[in-house]
Figure 1 (tube, rainbow, N blue to C red):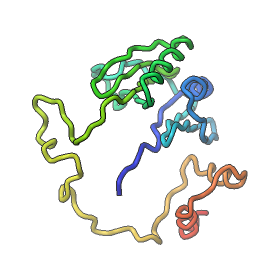
Figure 2 (spheres, rainbow, N blue to C red; figure 1 turned 90 degrees about the horizontal axis):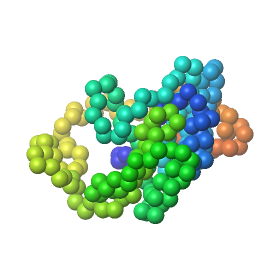
Figure 3 (tube, rainbow, N blue to C red; figure 1 turned 180 degrees about the vertical axis):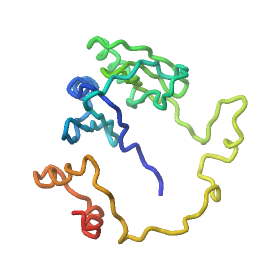
Figure 4 (cartoon, rainbow, N blue to C red; figure 1 turned 180 degrees about the horizontal axis):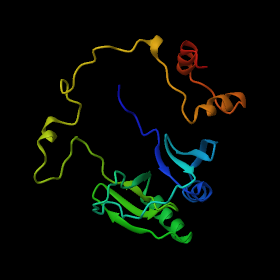
Length: 210
């Protein structure tokens, strides 16, 4: 059961209009979907098979700026987001476009496997655009003088490190509680702007959630 890609990265914004203007109109992402109710909005912007999402609500605030990779003693779990571009030419085209829009850009920086530029979105979120210039042929590929012991176990999941499943959830128990975005399904299906996968239709029918 492999994990294939990022479904979305979620962030907070006090101003969705400003955020959409930046990600859709400056960076070229697709405003893909959203839900809003009771002073709350949750919008998704799509690029390729990936998405970034933003929550907007009363009292939301912008991030305090910290440069990507810079050390901090603050209780932060998030550092930055990197988006891939396909060529060196595209990397510098984005640099030119951002600077023309008045966005301060740091770089390009040569990280060995990638070249990157760094900048901030209107919410203070640190962003990176990266051009991949080296393909890893054997993983784990490490350039470290003293790697931790677990690296020697290899790149693939190691069996027997966690307890085995004792009870497998049967299909008739596949159920999910209603969340904040639940109204999106009914709305999109009713208006003909969305459709269910065959598996989703079967699961919802069986669980009585359709």
